[in-house]
Length: 109
Image 1 (cartoon, rainbow, N blue to C red):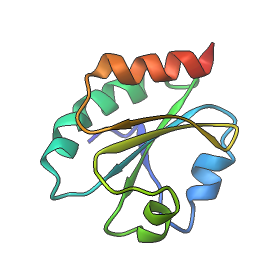
Image 2: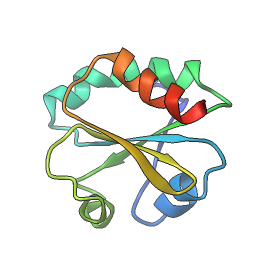
Image 3: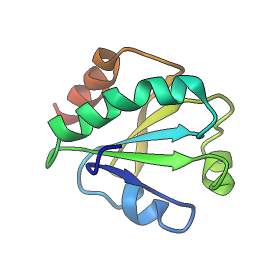
């Protein structure tokens, strides 16, 4: 696991994500989810590549049900891109790294 990927909880989601001054790609995941494990290396790479420009934050839906419910997470992995505290884009399921970088590039444009 990368040390550039952050982890948020129900308690600190607002601070880590909504109050961020850079775009935040949030990965709603669970340890038992196969596709979540498959997308993790791409998220590690993105977190390193966008360091200082954007953040990647993971939220374990089993441990943080309040946040998952708030954002209507019904299928994982579900990735939400936040900018200025608002959801700007959404991706559900296992998607190529290029789709996620496009989401971030659009938010940074």
